[in-house]
Image 1 (cartoon, helix red, strand yellow):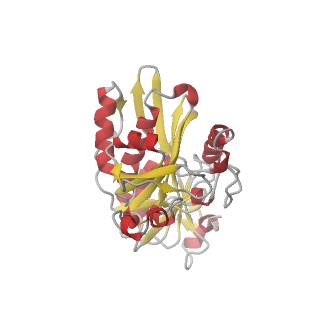
Image 2: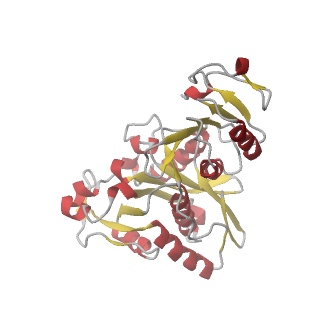
Image 3: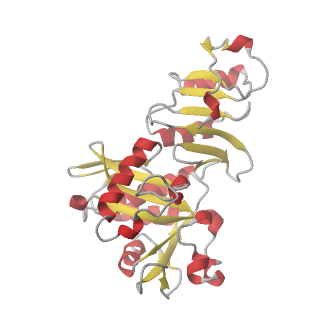
Length: 326
């Protein structure tokens, strides 16, 4: 969880990780779009009117004030983009932007009574820092109206193409595509916000991660090595304060994975750690030290028996089935 302070504003920014988080985001969208932008509602691919298929794979970031969601945005992996650059501008323009390393910004919203007070800058700053620290993405782009293109420019983004593009179903209005880097924008926004008197809790240039997190559906994050070759585990969060961390193998428990869990849970560590294979005493001790309140369990998908279903280092009875996910 990242904090940002300015006057009477004490904002907490984090990723939305469970259905109750997303319900708050959807209600914010529905209220904002029901009048002038109803075309963004009921798009299909999601059971909620204000959701669509991209929400299943997107990183959704929220800002909370006194526990209420007051701003939100989502970042979609460009390989599953809402507005693919190749469709809007053609292959030549799209080739200038690296899709495998990019995310697409969309659904940026701030509560009406708080607009003009820097919340969108805080939201995008903390989003950029979080993505740079916890994922393998390095670039972003947005397809937006010209007025918003000017907004993105002040955070270091530039035009991908000088010509506008039409979005099917939006009439004759033209849209522009802007692009930038997560680290470049986090630095630009940090300078701007600090110049406006904000105090930021997140450093503008976090180290590149060795383990990355990616959404899998509405309440699951998968952890992989930075090149995606090895799946280390998954974090299942039906509620934010009752997560289940499933480790894929004996070598899956490393400090970088625990760091990703901390960043996603934002102060609410997992209630259980499920091992799909046996782990050594050192790994079990390390898990217990990092998440002392979590029970350590064995998945029913694990091979063989483990001391009658009880881990002797913890005395905790195994509860098969928790690692199977939804």
